[in-house]
Image (cartoon, rainbow, N blue to C red; front, side):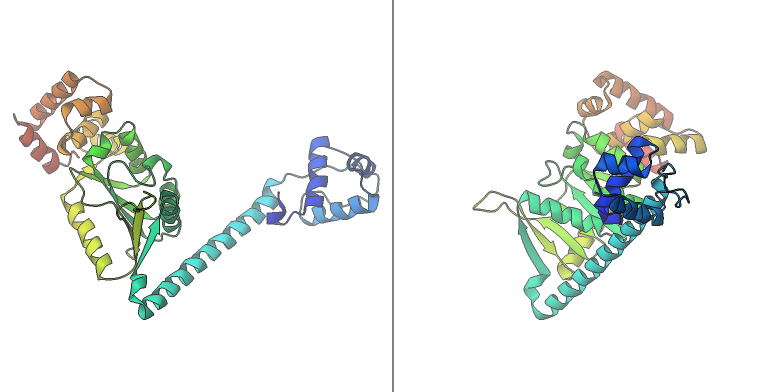
Length: 328
C-alpha cells in the first residue's frame, strides 16, 4: 500500500508488526512473520535508512521500537504530491500545445463533441482540476451531468486560488437544498449571482476552453456537449457571460452580511440579507418562505420592516434602495 511513496511491501510488513507489538526483538519478528533472520535484518536496515526504526544497537538482541511514521512518510508523500502536480501541469501544457497544433491544421478541432453524462462529468472535473486562473458557470435548473453538491473539484480549485464566478438561474434556487449548496460555495470564495433566466448551460475555464451542452444524442438519449477551444466562438461565449454577469443580482453569504453589519452602521442581518437576495432575484414570497424555513406571513412582515428601514413604501423602492445601499 505504501510502496508508492518508497516503502516496499517487505519493509512495510516488518514496520506494521513492530507497531502492533510496540517493542520486539529480532527473534520475535522472525517467529511472528515466519521469515529468515537475514531477511528481517535486511528489512530493518531499510527501515532505519527511512527513519522508521532507530539506529542499530551494538547488542543484536536489544529490543526494537518503531519511530513515528508521520514525519518521514509525510515528507515522501509531499514529494510525491509535488511530482504529481508537476506532471499534471506538464500534461495540461502538452494538451494545449496539441490542440493548438491541431487547430492550425484542421479547423474541425476547434470544437470537440462528447456524448454521455459520465463523459461530460469527467471532462468538467478534468478542466477544473487543471484550472489556473478562473472558472465561469451558467448554472441552469436540472443539471445534465454534475449537480452542485457533487462538484467537489470547485472547492479544491478555490483552495488553490482559482477564481469562480457563477450565475444561477432563479428556478434552480427553488430546488430543495439548492440555496444551501450555493451558500457553501460562496463561503468558500465563489462569487455568485442570480438571473431570472439563462440562455444556455455553460462552463468556461481560464478563458481558453468552454463546455456547452448540445441536444441529447438521437440514438442513446444521452446528453452531448461541445468542447470549444480558443476561437471567435469562444470569444462570443465569454462576451455572453460578461453581459449576463453585469445584469445579475449578487448572492451574499450569511457570513459576509454579518461582517458588513458590524463594519458599517445599519445593515440587514444574515437572514435579512439572504431574504433580500432572493427577493431582488424575483423569487416568489412562497418560495422564499420555503427556502428560509419560515411562513409566508413572516416573509411579508420582514419585507415590510426592511421597507421601513430603507424609507420606502413599495417593493420596487426596496429593491432600488437595497442595491443603492449595498445591502445585497
